[in-house]
Image (cartoon, rainbow, N blue to C red; front, side):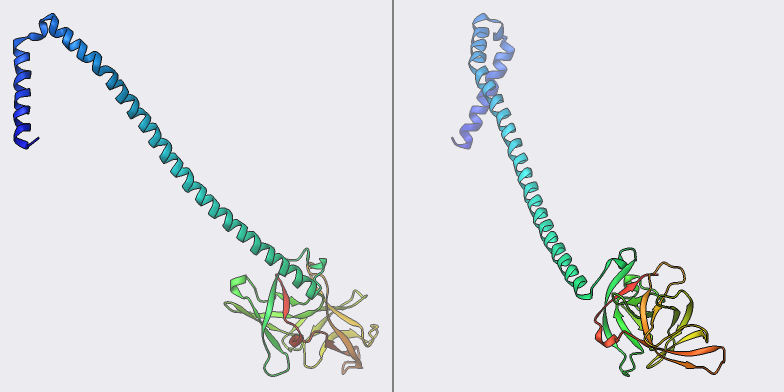
Length: 265
Protein backbone atom coordinates (compact mmCIF):
# COMPACT_ATOMS: atom_id res chain seq x y z
CA UNK A 1 0.00 0.00 0.00
CA UNK A 2 1.35 3.39 -1.06
CA UNK A 3 1.35 6.40 1.23
CA UNK A 4 -1.44 8.07 -0.85
CA UNK A 5 -3.75 5.06 -0.55
CA UNK A 6 -3.12 4.83 3.17
CA UNK A 7 -4.10 8.46 3.66
CA UNK A 8 -7.26 8.02 1.58
CA UNK A 9 -8.26 4.96 3.64
CA UNK A 10 -7.63 6.86 6.87
CA UNK A 11 -9.80 9.76 5.70
CA UNK A 12 -12.61 7.40 4.68
CA UNK A 13 -12.46 5.62 8.07
CA UNK A 14 -12.67 8.96 9.84
CA UNK A 15 -15.64 10.05 7.75
CA UNK A 16 -17.39 6.72 8.37
CA UNK A 17 -16.88 7.10 12.11
CA UNK A 18 -18.29 10.62 12.04
CA UNK A 19 -21.25 9.43 9.99
CA UNK A 20 -22.07 6.68 12.47
CA UNK A 21 -21.69 9.06 15.38
CA UNK A 22 -23.96 11.81 14.03
CA UNK A 23 -26.50 9.47 12.45
CA UNK A 24 -26.96 7.64 15.77
CA UNK A 25 -27.10 4.29 13.98
CA UNK A 26 -26.00 2.59 17.15
CA UNK A 27 -29.60 2.92 18.41
CA UNK A 28 -30.81 0.33 15.94
CA UNK A 29 -30.94 -3.23 17.22
CA UNK A 30 -29.18 -4.79 14.24
CA UNK A 31 -26.28 -2.38 14.71
CA UNK A 32 -26.07 -3.31 18.41
CA UNK A 33 -26.13 -7.00 17.48
CA UNK A 34 -23.35 -6.37 14.99
CA UNK A 35 -21.26 -4.61 17.62
CA UNK A 36 -21.96 -7.40 20.14
CA UNK A 37 -20.93 -10.00 17.59
CA UNK A 38 -17.71 -8.14 16.86
CA UNK A 39 -17.00 -7.95 20.60
CA UNK A 40 -17.72 -11.65 20.96
CA UNK A 41 -15.23 -12.41 18.20
CA UNK A 42 -12.53 -10.07 19.48
CA UNK A 43 -12.81 -10.81 23.25
CA UNK A 44 -10.94 -14.18 23.07
CA UNK A 45 -8.25 -12.51 21.04
CA UNK A 46 -7.86 -9.76 23.66
CA UNK A 47 -7.79 -12.28 26.52
CA UNK A 48 -5.24 -14.34 24.61
CA UNK A 49 -3.18 -11.20 24.12
CA UNK A 50 -3.27 -10.42 27.88
CA UNK A 51 -2.33 -14.00 28.69
CA UNK A 52 0.61 -13.89 26.27
CA UNK A 53 1.80 -10.56 27.65
CA UNK A 54 1.54 -11.88 31.24
CA UNK A 55 3.41 -15.08 30.36
CA UNK A 56 6.05 -13.08 28.54
CA UNK A 57 6.55 -10.83 31.57
CA UNK A 58 6.94 -13.85 33.86
CA UNK A 59 9.40 -15.48 31.48
CA UNK A 60 11.44 -12.30 31.23
CA UNK A 61 11.41 -11.93 35.03
CA UNK A 62 12.56 -15.54 35.43
CA UNK A 63 15.27 -15.01 32.81
CA UNK A 64 16.66 -11.89 34.48
CA UNK A 65 16.50 -13.65 37.88
CA UNK A 66 18.41 -16.58 36.40
CA UNK A 67 21.02 -14.17 35.00
CA UNK A 68 21.44 -12.51 38.42
CA UNK A 69 21.73 -15.90 40.14
CA UNK A 70 24.32 -17.02 37.61
CA UNK A 71 26.35 -13.86 38.16
CA UNK A 72 26.16 -14.39 41.93
CA UNK A 73 27.26 -18.02 41.47
CA UNK A 74 30.25 -16.87 39.41
CA UNK A 75 31.19 -14.35 42.12
CA UNK A 76 30.83 -16.99 44.84
CA UNK A 77 32.92 -19.48 42.88
CA UNK A 78 35.67 -16.90 42.53
CA UNK A 79 35.46 -16.18 46.25
CA UNK A 80 35.70 -19.88 47.06
CA UNK A 81 38.78 -20.20 44.84
CA UNK A 82 40.38 -17.22 46.60
CA UNK A 83 39.62 -18.74 50.01
CA UNK A 84 41.07 -22.10 48.95
CA UNK A 85 44.21 -20.33 47.73
CA UNK A 86 44.45 -18.41 51.02
CA UNK A 87 44.02 -21.66 52.95
CA UNK A 88 46.84 -23.26 50.98
CA UNK A 89 49.08 -20.25 51.65
CA UNK A 90 48.21 -20.44 55.35
CA UNK A 91 49.04 -24.15 55.44
CA UNK A 92 52.37 -23.40 53.75
CA UNK A 93 53.13 -20.69 56.34
CA UNK A 94 52.23 -23.03 59.20
CA UNK A 95 54.45 -25.73 57.72
CA UNK A 96 57.32 -23.27 57.40
CA UNK A 97 56.76 -22.06 60.97
CA UNK A 98 56.78 -25.63 62.24
CA UNK A 99 60.00 -26.33 60.32
CA UNK A 100 61.56 -23.16 61.70
CA UNK A 101 60.47 -24.03 65.24
CA UNK A 102 62.11 -27.45 64.98
CA UNK A 103 65.23 -25.89 63.49
CA UNK A 104 65.77 -23.42 66.30
CA UNK A 105 64.44 -25.73 69.02
CA UNK A 106 61.54 -23.51 70.06
CA UNK A 107 60.04 -24.70 73.34
CA UNK A 108 57.05 -23.90 75.51
CA UNK A 109 58.97 -21.24 77.41
CA UNK A 110 57.85 -18.79 74.70
CA UNK A 111 54.19 -19.70 75.23
CA UNK A 112 53.48 -16.86 77.66
CA UNK A 113 55.73 -14.28 76.02
CA UNK A 114 54.86 -11.65 73.46
CA UNK A 115 57.59 -12.05 70.88
CA UNK A 116 58.37 -11.70 67.18
CA UNK A 117 60.58 -13.81 64.96
CA UNK A 118 63.22 -11.80 63.13
CA UNK A 119 66.26 -12.34 60.94
CA UNK A 120 69.79 -10.95 61.29
CA UNK A 121 70.57 -8.88 58.20
CA UNK A 122 73.92 -7.25 59.12
CA UNK A 123 76.88 -7.93 61.42
CA UNK A 124 79.47 -5.70 63.04
CA UNK A 125 82.05 -5.09 60.27
CA UNK A 126 84.81 -4.50 62.84
CA UNK A 127 84.77 -8.18 63.76
CA UNK A 128 84.26 -7.50 67.47
CA UNK A 129 80.54 -8.42 67.25
CA UNK A 130 79.56 -5.35 69.24
CA UNK A 131 76.23 -5.08 67.43
CA UNK A 132 73.97 -6.65 64.81
CA UNK A 133 71.14 -5.32 62.64
CA UNK A 134 67.87 -7.26 62.58
CA UNK A 135 64.90 -7.05 60.24
CA UNK A 136 61.95 -5.13 61.66
CA UNK A 137 61.71 -1.80 63.40
CA UNK A 138 58.96 0.74 63.83
CA UNK A 139 56.97 -1.11 61.19
CA UNK A 140 56.72 -4.10 63.56
CA UNK A 141 56.43 -2.18 66.80
CA UNK A 142 59.94 -2.91 68.11
CA UNK A 143 61.12 -0.64 70.92
CA UNK A 144 64.40 0.22 72.58
CA UNK A 145 65.10 -2.22 75.41
CA UNK A 146 63.44 -5.23 73.76
CA UNK A 147 65.39 -8.39 74.51
CA UNK A 148 66.78 -10.39 71.57
CA UNK A 149 67.42 -14.08 72.20
CA UNK A 150 67.82 -17.49 70.65
CA UNK A 151 65.79 -20.38 72.04
CA UNK A 152 67.70 -20.30 75.33
CA UNK A 153 70.46 -17.69 75.24
CA UNK A 154 70.83 -13.91 75.04
CA UNK A 155 71.83 -12.30 71.74
CA UNK A 156 71.48 -8.68 72.82
CA UNK A 157 69.17 -5.76 73.52
CA UNK A 158 67.58 -3.40 71.01
CA UNK A 159 69.46 -0.10 71.23
CA UNK A 160 67.97 1.86 68.32
CA UNK A 161 64.83 1.37 66.22
CA UNK A 162 64.56 2.54 62.60
CA UNK A 163 61.82 2.27 60.00
CA UNK A 164 62.24 -1.38 59.05
CA UNK A 165 65.39 -2.43 60.95
CA UNK A 166 66.74 -2.27 64.50
CA UNK A 167 70.25 -2.07 65.95
CA UNK A 168 70.98 -4.62 68.67
CA UNK A 169 73.98 -4.34 71.00
CA UNK A 170 75.45 -7.66 72.13
CA UNK A 171 76.85 -8.70 75.54
CA UNK A 172 80.29 -7.94 74.06
CA UNK A 173 79.41 -4.24 73.88
CA UNK A 174 80.42 -2.03 76.83
CA UNK A 175 77.04 -0.27 76.54
CA UNK A 176 75.28 -3.55 77.37
CA UNK A 177 74.25 -4.11 81.00
CA UNK A 178 71.55 -6.13 82.70
CA UNK A 179 70.50 -7.81 85.91
CA UNK A 180 72.01 -11.29 86.26
CA UNK A 181 72.20 -14.28 88.60
CA UNK A 182 74.32 -17.38 88.86
CA UNK A 183 72.38 -20.51 87.96
CA UNK A 184 71.04 -22.22 91.05
CA UNK A 185 71.59 -19.16 93.24
CA UNK A 186 69.18 -16.33 93.84
CA UNK A 187 71.49 -13.41 94.56
CA UNK A 188 71.35 -10.71 91.90
CA UNK A 189 74.36 -9.07 90.29
CA UNK A 190 74.93 -6.72 87.38
CA UNK A 191 76.46 -7.91 84.14
CA UNK A 192 78.41 -5.29 82.19
CA UNK A 193 79.40 -6.02 78.62
CA UNK A 194 82.92 -6.03 77.28
CA UNK A 195 85.12 -7.56 74.59
CA UNK A 196 86.09 -10.37 74.60
CA UNK A 197 84.64 -10.88 78.07
CA UNK A 198 82.16 -9.02 80.24
CA UNK A 199 82.16 -8.46 83.99
CA UNK A 200 79.89 -9.65 86.77
CA UNK A 201 79.82 -6.74 89.19
CA UNK A 202 79.29 -6.56 92.95
CA UNK A 203 80.40 -10.13 93.71
CA UNK A 204 81.41 -10.22 97.37
CA UNK A 205 84.57 -12.08 98.38
CA UNK A 206 82.48 -14.56 100.40
CA UNK A 207 80.15 -15.37 97.47
CA UNK A 208 80.68 -18.85 96.10
CA UNK A 209 81.57 -18.31 92.45
CA UNK A 210 83.40 -20.91 90.36
CA UNK A 211 84.75 -21.17 86.84
CA UNK A 212 82.16 -22.42 84.32
CA UNK A 213 79.24 -21.25 86.47
CA UNK A 214 76.40 -20.23 84.19
CA UNK A 215 75.28 -16.59 84.31
CA UNK A 216 71.61 -15.97 83.54
CA UNK A 217 70.00 -12.71 82.50
CA UNK A 218 66.93 -12.06 84.63
CA UNK A 219 64.00 -9.69 84.48
CA UNK A 220 63.58 -7.74 87.72
CA UNK A 221 59.81 -7.72 87.14
CA UNK A 222 59.72 -11.48 86.70
CA UNK A 223 57.82 -11.35 83.40
CA UNK A 224 60.66 -12.80 81.29
CA UNK A 225 62.14 -16.20 82.18
CA UNK A 226 65.94 -16.45 82.66
CA UNK A 227 68.05 -16.73 79.52
CA UNK A 228 71.64 -17.90 79.45
CA UNK A 229 74.02 -14.96 79.17
CA UNK A 230 77.44 -16.52 79.52
CA UNK A 231 79.80 -18.60 81.62
CA UNK A 232 82.33 -17.58 84.25
CA UNK A 233 85.85 -17.91 82.82
CA UNK A 234 87.93 -16.27 85.60
CA UNK A 235 87.51 -15.33 89.26
CA UNK A 236 90.23 -12.98 90.60
CA UNK A 237 90.83 -10.71 93.51
CA UNK A 238 89.80 -7.21 92.64
CA UNK A 239 91.27 -3.86 93.54
CA UNK A 240 88.55 -3.46 96.14
CA UNK A 241 89.21 -5.94 99.01
CA UNK A 242 85.48 -6.51 99.49
CA UNK A 243 84.66 -7.63 95.93
CA UNK A 244 85.93 -10.18 93.47
CA UNK A 245 86.69 -9.62 89.82
CA UNK A 246 84.58 -12.06 87.81
CA UNK A 247 84.96 -12.31 84.03
CA UNK A 248 82.11 -13.77 81.96
CA UNK A 249 82.32 -15.09 78.40
CA UNK A 250 79.06 -14.65 76.42
CA UNK A 251 77.84 -17.94 75.00
CA UNK A 252 76.23 -16.68 71.78
CA UNK A 253 78.32 -15.99 68.68
CA UNK A 254 76.12 -13.57 66.70
CA UNK A 255 77.72 -14.51 63.39
CA UNK A 256 76.59 -18.10 63.85
CA UNK A 257 72.97 -17.05 64.24
CA UNK A 258 70.44 -16.28 61.52
CA UNK A 259 67.03 -16.34 63.20
CA UNK A 260 66.37 -14.57 66.52
CA UNK A 261 63.36 -13.83 68.75
CA UNK A 262 62.53 -10.31 69.85
CA UNK A 263 60.78 -10.38 73.23
CA UNK A 264 58.44 -7.40 73.39
CA UNK A 265 58.63 -5.51 76.65
